[in-house]
Length: 220
Image (cartoon, rainbow, N blue to C red):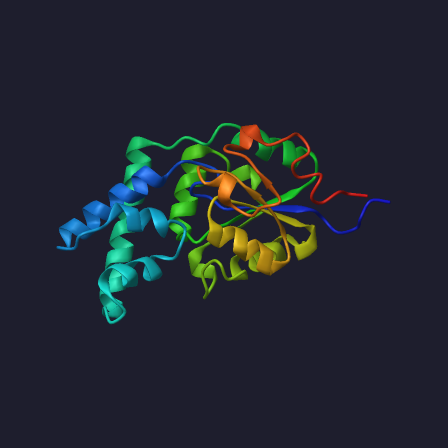
């Protein structure tokens, strides 16, 4: 019999649905340089997907004033959104097709990202994929960043889905660990996919097997 509980896919955004890393790194470097701070690209790559306050305290030190952390974070994200609007972004191969396929199959879908809400709204507008998502959860909606599972649990709740009926799509070890702590299955995509302990993994959404999601949460 078909389960009465809906199935859901919780998508991370940056590095999962689209390649936004270059624009993020440019925004970080230019924002920090304008404030007189140096930014190590290797550090930015290693912390990609974490909350801005965590990234900035790692760069500026644990005693950096909260007001400075907030100012730099807001300036970086505003610069990033301007880069997205002026330069555009492309979804990863297969991302749009999977969104459509899952929606047609009755899966509920949400964005579960550490990004600010304005970033999510900008990406959804520029790429035109907003109709696929019944909910979005941003960094402002949670108090704890990945690998804490809060962002995924909030997204599942907004979709009316049980954790065991959810699949998380992520590109970072923080996200995959957060999915595990949430009691959810996981799909890894992105450049580091082979090293991530996910249930299913591929370089791009287009490379995922046709039953990638069905095998994790069957409807019978």
